[in-house]
Image (cartoon, rainbow, N blue to C red; front, side, top):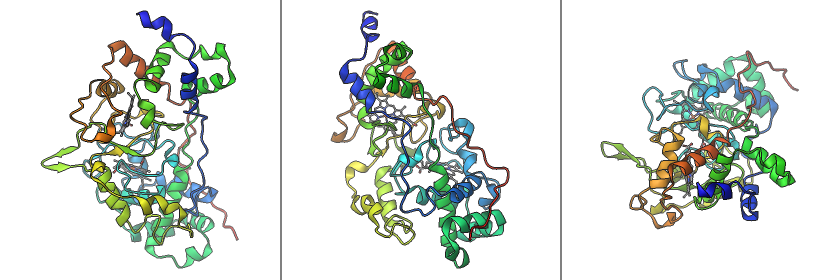
Length: 382
Ligand code: HEC
Ligand code: HEC
C-alpha cells in the first residue's frame, strides 16, 4: 500500500486544473433557437404532462416515463429497452440531456425535439401517428390552451397533423431541457478547491480521490468524458461488440449520420423555427466515413451510478464491469487507428474499486422533482 500515503496528499496544480475543467455545475441550458417552445413556461408544462401521458401511445398503455423512470435516473434498469418487443439498445438516463447536441446512441437526431418524434412514431414504442397525436393535443382543453399559449394563435387554428406532432415534440423537449441535475459530491470538491478551502477538500473521500487521479491522469477518461457534463458530445468506439446476432449489426454512428441527413425533421428542414438555419450547421457539415462504423455517443457520467446496466446495448452490468472493460480491453478489438487513446489500463483490484468510488461521487445529492402535474391547468393568453 505504498502509494496510498502519496495519493492522499494535496492535489497537484495539474490535477487542480483537470478538476476545474469539469465545472462549474450546474451549466445553463441555452435556449434552442429551432424550438419556439424552448424556455417557455406553457410549453414546459405541456411537455411535462405529455411525458407521463399514456394517451399519447396508440394503445393508451405506454408513455415516455414507462422507460425513462424518475426513480431509475430516468432510465429503466434493463439491458435493452422493452417496448412492444425488446429494442436493440439500452435506455439512457435523461438528466442534463439539454446540454447535448446529438441525440440517441448514434446521434440520429440533431435536436432534442426531433429525437422525441422517434419514440412517438416507432411501432415498437408509442406507435402513434401524427393524426393520433393531433387528436390527443386537440381533444384535451388544457393541452389545447397550453399549446396555443406556447406556439401561437395562428399555429393553433390551421396546423397540419405533422405540425401538431412537432409541437408536442417541442413541448417535450422544452420540458426535458429543464432536467438539470443538482450538485454532486464531486461538484462540492470542485467548488471548495476553487475557493482554496483545504479543510473542506479533505472531506472528499480518499478512495474517490485516488480514483479521480486515475480518471484525469493515466486513465485518459477525461479526453472523451470531457467538461462539466463528462461528455465531449461526440462518437467513439471503445470495443463494445455491436453484433445483434443472426448476422445483424448495429452500425452506430454510421447509421446515425445517414438517418439525420435524410430526416425531414432535421435542423435544415421546414419544421425548425430558426429562420437563419444557423443551428443546422453541424448537420450541414457532417460527413460519413468508414471510421464511424461501430461508434457510439460518449455518454455523460453524471448520475451514472443510477442507470445500470451500461453501454449502448446494456452489455455491462455494473460500474465494476465497465472499469474492468477499460482495464483489460483487447487492442485488436478496436478496429480503428483513431482510438489510440485507449490502452488497457491493467488496474489492480484496489485501483478499480477507487475508480468506481470516484464515479459514484458524480451522483447528485438531490434531484428536482420530475413528477407529473395531477392535472395541468391553463389560462388562455390573449
Ligand atoms: C420502450 C422504451 C422507451 C420509451 C417508451 C421512450 N424511450 Fe426514450 N429512449 C429509449 C431508448 C432505447 C433510447 C436510445 C435510442 C437510440 O439510441 O436509438 C432512448 C433515447 C432517448 C433520448 C436520447 C437521449 C440521449 O442522451 O441522446 C431522448 C431525448 C428520449 N429517449 C426521450 C424520450 C421521450 C420524449 C419519449 C416519449 C415520447 C421516450 N423517450 C420514450 C427508450 C424509450
Ligand atoms: C475514446 C473515448 C473514451 C475514453 C477514453 C473513455 N470512454 Fe467511457 N465511453 C465512451 C463511449 C463511446 C461510451 C459508450 C460506448 C458504447 O455504448 O458502445 C462510453 C461509456 C462509458 C460508461 C458507461 C456509461 C453508460 O451510461 O452506459 C462509463 C461508466 C464510462 N464510459 C467510463 C469511462 C472511464 C472510467 C474511462 C477511463 C478509464 C473512460 N470511460 C474512457 C468513450 C470513452
